Length: 392
Image 1 (cartoon, rainbow, N blue to C red):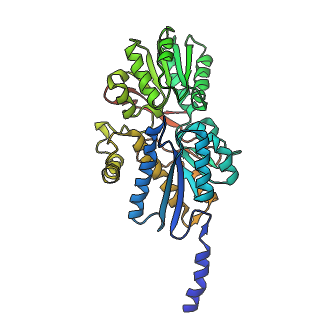
Image 2 (cartoon, one colour):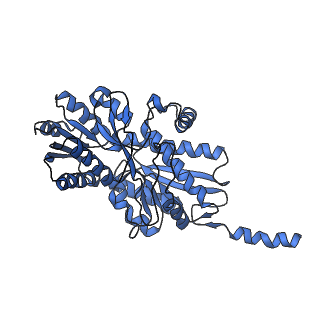
């Protein structure tokens, strides 16, 4: 009997498979986000990740292993993202990266990580290029793909203002252009009177977008599509009100957080239409939601300096939960290949920050992250979410 036990032991041990970044006791994962610079409000994603995995570790970790999570500052700069990512892969030897932010910074490390066969998961960008499992199988978006969102908003315009004159402000990079093209294409294909009458772009480093907004307001447009991020979103919403311009405003989903709207002035944001897939963390309607309550418990214990209504932090909480689920599903096979496999089979999994009916839609042959979305309109205090979701 003792001999049988001894013979079984090597076989059990052989069932465990590890790549660099994993062992019997630890799983090492990484991320780059702007902890400083013009995109620094998104640095909270990293702080929430640290808190989430600390909480998990205090409860025993994942499948008995503690998670070492390393979040590095890239200042929303492509060169700094390259430097930080190389450090994570070559010095820290992480098993995978998740939740890194920004189309331009992540494009800069896209080929590198795929050549290294290191998973680049749940990216905080919805660029269409991340859905290319044939050529870049190691990279997957964590946000709804921008073209999906843009097409839904364009169809909303065609249905609700068929003779719309649209002015567009967009970030002058891949992020902005990924929204711009699909939106314009839907208007053109609709064959109606809705058309784009003015466009302006801005660079992330510009201190203000006042001149662009003044020019757009003079275009005669009655619809304003606001493809901006961070402080530029707050500035543009405020400027619309200051100019006395009263267009229907459309906003990209990543910029609908309460902290951004509060910086613009909630009254100024009244009437804005956007795509929804996450719960509004600052709204009373979600106060007793289990996911919101769990986030609040985490926030109070580990992140007391983060406000309770910080929607970016809440999204980071949901993404950390998704990454933990991927690692949990890996079991004792903690290899790059199996991490990718489990991520590509996450379809149907819903995180604490997602609205009811919304879940990831990944498959091994289609990396579209989320296909079911809602439209919503801001009433000055809360977002009124449509009754029925839209599936692209």
